Length: 136
Image 1 (spheres, rainbow, N blue to C red):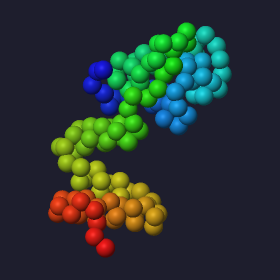
Image 2 (cartoon, rainbow, N blue to C red):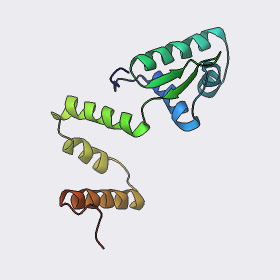
Image 3 (cartoon, rainbow, N blue to C red):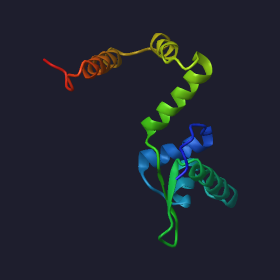
């Protein structure tokens, strides 16, 4: 399999999101899920998007049946990580701090979001200290 690329277009991302949310699908099923209409041109568009995603290592194709079935070959969180890393490299000299600062300060984080961030940082700190799991 090719190395997974993070440069996924919006149209390709719509197809991936359908695969993540609703599982493996044929081209026809993806046409209905993503575009909610049929037609030769839409079918050909989805087919081309899947070909590009397969070349990028983001989807895999099961060719065992008469109709090919596609599934995501990359997890949503892995693509998010790759894309955020690419943004950090391009805009922040590779540092994640300015990117994270902007996301936290520029967004409307709920109390639940803030608590999840605090918990995540605490878990990371605990692992780095060698504790493995947080102590109570």
